[in-house]
Amino acid sequence: MSTDDFPLHSHKHSLRTPINRVFALIYWCAILALLYHHTLSLLHSTTLTSFFITLTLLISDSILAFLNTTSQAFRMNPLYRKEYPENLKRVLQKSDLPALDVSYVLRIPTRSLR
Image 1 (cartoon, one colour):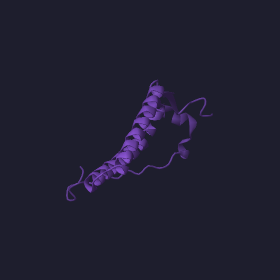
Image 2 (cartoon, helix red, strand yellow):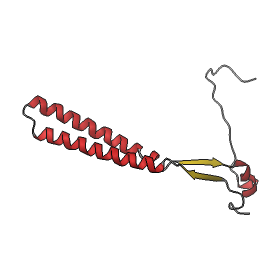
Image 3 (cartoon, one colour):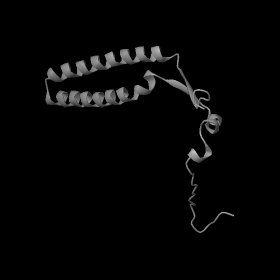
Image 4 (cartoon, one colour):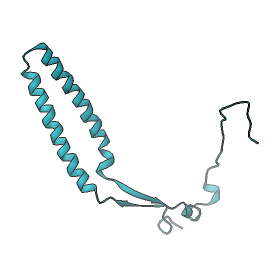
């Protein structure tokens, strides 16, 4: 028997994928425009105080842009998955499954299970 006869899982692409990708593109353009604005403000700062304030804003916005970029991967291609654990018995033998050890830890060491 093969897994094609009895699938172990199936997936379906979300209908929101194109919308999420367009949003990510627009958001990325806005971040680039913001970083460009901070860079120009940094180059044309007149006092030391405005230089450090603009530098701080540039660094913080760069960090937030990096965090947003790394979190966009989950929104670029969302999937809906469905598992079929009942087909596992049909695909594998019982001897192919690993042994499962169950252990428990109690919060109060003097107390025991009855």
